[in-house]
Image (cartoon, rainbow, N blue to C red; front, side):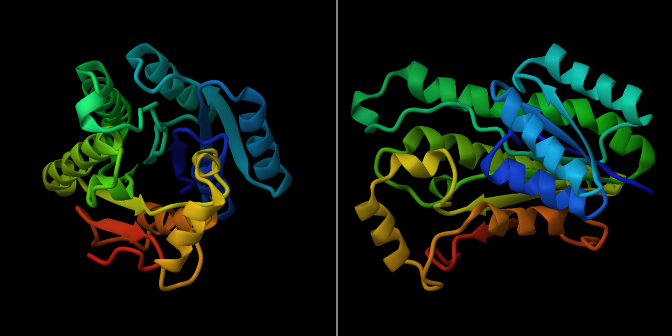
Length: 248
């Protein structure tokens, strides 16, 4: 059976690397994007050039109607539902101290994070439940577990996402659906990595026992394991992809 994977936020960085790797491993891949149409089409072209199957589909993952449209496009094109959800799309957030933060900045990020996770999960669950097999993988971030200066909005939202995943793992296990979280530390070669100056990056490398920062392919490898047929008995877990920078 050829599995279908939906990767949200897949036009660049971790999402694009994950889409390419899942396609390499034989899955049909939906490359979701919001604004970067050409970049998403480039990812699809790379997959197809390597002999894989993929489609680029625009959708704001916070929008129920848009996400339902993605599921319908999958059904029409490939005759079924989504078997694997990799929820990677990152909604905007501010980096600032709590004392100067508005409720809209903190609560807005929390609402966006959980709304998106809720919407995409509800959309893919019917097909997974019907067939008694599914893989739900959520991308978190280090501040969700280990506070960092100025990152309270992101960290609070990602902590909520991780707990959401654990509750789902408990509820959906009897239906044959595994639910896991991948938690990268700092990742080079992404749009967010360009925000950091060289001095900060050097400090991060110095604090990493493996002597470098992650790249998107490192994170994609962990996602691909959770997404695959070999992952028969891991659910409710979090994989920290940080080279030993933080050990839990």
